[in-house]
Image (cartoon, rainbow, N blue to C red; front, side, top):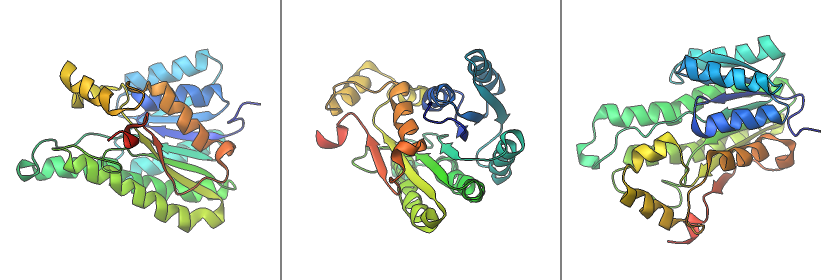
Length: 253
């Protein structure tokens, strides 16, 4: 039996990278999906690819900073598929980068609003629906940056992503009695558009590769497998964790 058979999942940031890879994997494992992102054409392509492989998915575009959009994603899941079991809150941005004393309020706020506050709003709407379905899994995409180590010039990104770990722990303790598990996925370097934006020279990429015990960065599909574990009943006794999937970067410093 497929690991997500009869499950309904929301995935945000699904137009590319880890979110897209996870949507394809979750669908192959039997989940019915509501995929969200800002770019309609990329979501349409994803839904078509899932359908061609025999899966079921619907798309809803929007900005995760909107609590109304978070609510609409949940309503879409329930109205289309009858319930919600899994939410993978994966959308994120780098936000303002560079020396902290030069960072604009806009750069700081972008990171906090999209990476942290949007996840808070998402959970507010997702958790009651998941609890009503008998329990399930909420996953946030955090990062090793700001947790096991950080880099100069990443104050907004580090703070916003570290905040997700605290949010994860609080929600896990609050809603565990209702059967809702909450975990944070902490990737190491992963070959996504965001990674290439942050490390836009061969020198920078070689430096990041060298931080990992495996001496490479991950493919998005490898992070999708970790998300699948947290989404599935294979992790039925796992909650409140900061789940490092970092190629050994946290042990090589």
